[in-house]
Length: 314
Length: 307
Image 1: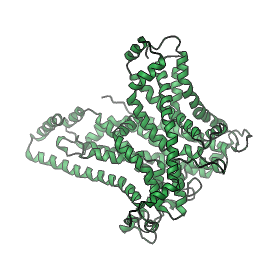
Image 2: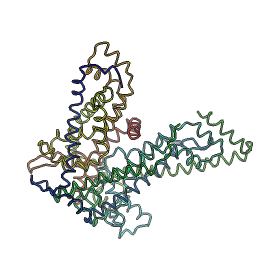
Image 3: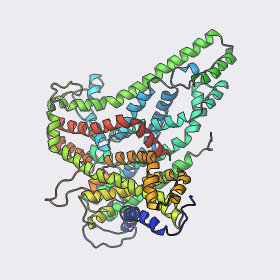
Image 4: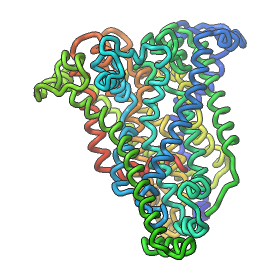
């Protein structure tokens, strides 16, 4: 820390610079976070100013709430599959982009046009989830006008008389949403992994090559271990994204705040919003918020522990 | 660079077979196969990205019957009237609302975020570490945790469905990341410049604005991009806080909310080209911004995640 700054009379300056940011942050972020815990033990409706303390009633009601339990299970499925699929695809493409070139030099050459691929793949990342919701709502349309049904009909895989109702089919709806998240995320993680791959010194590859390693071996023995930190971070980020899912589910699926058909695409965030804004059960919704926080914490810890490896310096 | 890589390549070839021509050929065709293979996969994914976007944009030129009839039909006319109708349906207003909010929220975020980060990074005082972690820990919690009390907090200030309410909330929720990033940036700046400025008699405030902020420009740009994208695409906060509270309240929907609104209206009505045109209008600025700054955006978001 800079020693010039240790003068007298800086208290006013420090306080002045911290006051506004801290006040805003306390008012709109920290205090609501804290309040949620308190409200989660009450039967507050949000409408009336009065409410009673009900102890753990909201939490025990949550354990019996079939809709919420289903939503929790869907979040767990998404937590497992969204990071896994996205990271595998992103790693695969990143390796192709960075090492898939004509292997005259032994497999550490990028493909031609790698810059173009990175530009195209990354673009979905700057689109808002609302745009994705409308876009994929149209792609998954339940008639021949949907892009997916249209293409499948043309290929003869779907009968034009009975196109697939992607978002109204209990078996498909969650996976359709999952594909949107993957479509959105792969480009970003490709660029992330690419940056990490490019920071690996070339002489490590040369050494591996001298030892007679092939391309696949190079990837698993050299590239992947050196990327492990980024993979780990990505898993946590994707997990947090999979915990949310509110925008896509609430706008693309049927039902008040989404979740349909018959709760087959329900996630915790949509149940929370419905209870808060539609049923007016604010205290109950707060308890769900606390459960979401707990799961996010557990998720981060588990991911970081399960993927722990010896850190490799280079 | 190529020669450096090539030399060991040759060495390996020689070692494994004294550089016999047959061996070299095998290597060459191996590379070729993989090259075709990787290009194949990469191209398929590129098509999967581009195709839906282009298809949607083409939809704004179709008629309703064409959109419902067959996904693979080509637009029959090239009139822009769906775009005009989308604009009249409110896309223009939603656009303006988003801009109004961001014109204030992004600069305020940057100002407050770097002020706090600067003080925390360069001035030791009791409680410094505590306040820093206090700021940074906010990034770990899901926004849903705060949503219910946040709504009533903003209501108590009588700022529901107002620009200033949303602006303050955006600034507050952008604080953890901005402070975190700028903190590490200010720490890397040399102290010598600061010392020189002190000797020249500059006050702390003046040093910050005239010396430190200009030096931190690269960091500010990265965080700025991140905040612009994040706030432009925000949906949950406005959908809770920007609802008309009474019948006489004006609609102050932001663009993301407006699009969803339009989707829900058009889902039942029969003017789908308007919806597609609305999304296309919302996409174009992002496409332009992205193509002009893609290098900085990719670098900014990547470094932001890795930190």
